[in-house]
Length: 131
Image 1 (cartoon, rainbow, N blue to C red):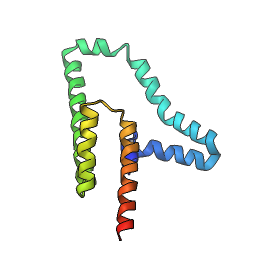
Image 2: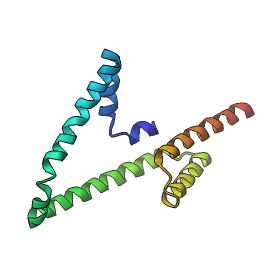
Image 3: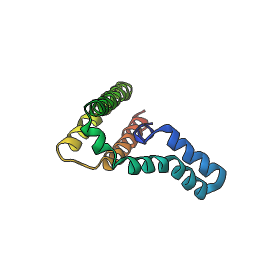
Image 4: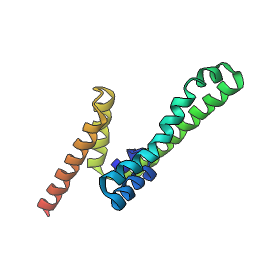
């Protein structure tokens, strides 16, 4: 679930899965490109316009509002995921340790996901072994 939540979105993941299901690897690649390519084209096409928009007081204020709304949305989702994910001592320790590794040592988030998965497997194996 955590990996699915940090991806660009369930729609992208679903499109890739359906593409793979319908046409194998080529279908997955085409479906993924079909989801991501329009965004890349839009960003590339709008990048020369953004500095001009920034010079406008009204448009600049609008862009600042969009940025703040995006940050607020991300903070809200992070809070919601955190409330649902931190359910016991092992998950609280994982969050604390990951936060320190990310903020203090700037560890790549891929390593944190892989390390968290490994620790989760070990904790569950220990629980099964103790039962």
